[in-house]
Length: 314
Image 1 (cartoon, rainbow, N blue to C red):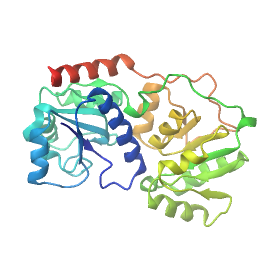
Image 2 (image 1 turned 90 degrees about the horizontal axis):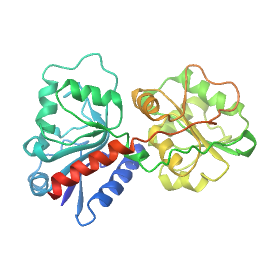
Image 3 (image 1 turned 60 degrees about the vertical axis):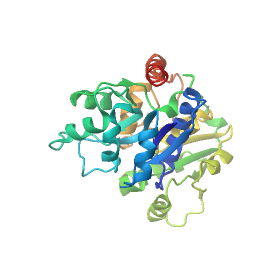
Image 4 (image 1 turned 45 degrees about the vertical axis):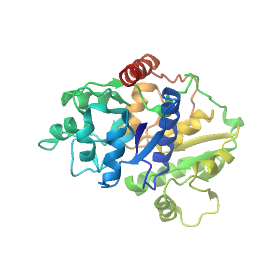
């Protein structure tokens, strides 16, 4: 049995669901004969049943999302981290990221991290910043990028302006900036295409209404991934602030332009070449992805997978 510490459980964020989907796919390929059991990370669940699962697991794979931080216990993306400490020598991160840019960590934060991750865990992180933060706490890792990107070939599906009929827009309610986000919407309107808004939590829809009211020109679709897949045809591109929604669409050959509003998009964009839009200096005219190449660190991914499989299977 392999335990997947899964950020999508008790989460209302579609991005967590997307991450979980890709992580599970990788675990099934790595361990085809094992039962994959999911347990939560974003709740203070402490129970005998959870402890029994962790005790009986051949390995515990935590991933992904931005659940690492130097601000524990104030930042509780990994809310039940203490439950993993007794099992630290079989805990492995996969594609995890750092919560945000941080100037300094809280006292004893490194002790908390090492208590959950141990000395011998095999850890995969999704960007160079996270790798450096773990290293500063004495924890080595591979920078594999995010598992949502592991299947990308490197080719970028650029489209001419004339071939685009619709734009898929996202916003992020928990990083509100009304002036900035109104400017992004105005820019997308200026491109003269159909606009579909893909909310990734109920609060995203409320935030859109705060910005534009009940504007019939922006069509709101459902939150599930299946809703956006129905409209992500050959005429669609993506412009928005939601990172993993963008990467999922890129996996379906939709050109994406991520408006970077935090460290996650900035760091992954820097490492992989994922096209970013400078939201403080929006482009003039139609965005172009011509000449873009997505760099996926396949050697690092293969090295991490090989190390984990050798450790677990002997």
